[in-house]
Image 1 (cartoon, helix red, strand yellow):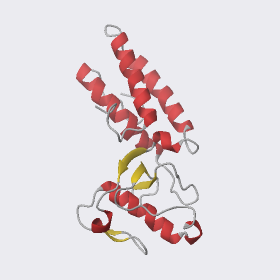
Image 2 (cartoon, rainbow, N blue to C red; image 1 turned 90 degrees about the vertical axis):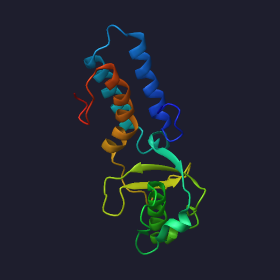
Image 3 (cartoon, one colour; image 1 turned 60 degrees about the vertical axis):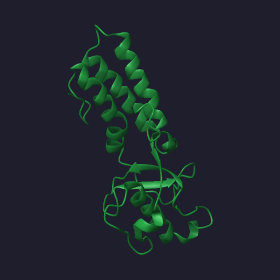
Image 4 (cartoon, rainbow, N blue to C red; image 1 turned 45 degrees about the horizontal axis):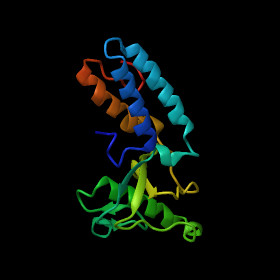
Length: 177
């Protein structure tokens, strides 16, 4: 399912296809140790994507109902109850853009209908997910990416959803079983 979801990062799609090909080409002989080696290699490649290829590992979505769901994005972040994560992540971007007046000429604000990329942040004090407009990563104001959570959500969870029904144990964040 992750292979056809539009939110799945391009990097993850290609790598998950590789894992599936490995499993199907070795149906009688695959084992968890070989799979762990492959996943550890993926993690090394994944880490090399930051910061130059952040678009390849960031997930994508669209922002809808921004104006109805965000109460304040200027001095602090406030949302209506039940606001979608993409709206909250977009509001975090707009909040940081409001604080960085010098970047107003370079970047647009996110509004309803905007196609966004998003990732999980290391510093979760303001918001745990940060969004930006596809193709315009705001390196000057973007919070640091939490590579562990991003890898878990975009690579490990889909792999685990494939290998668990095959009777293999799930791979944890430490890349062990």
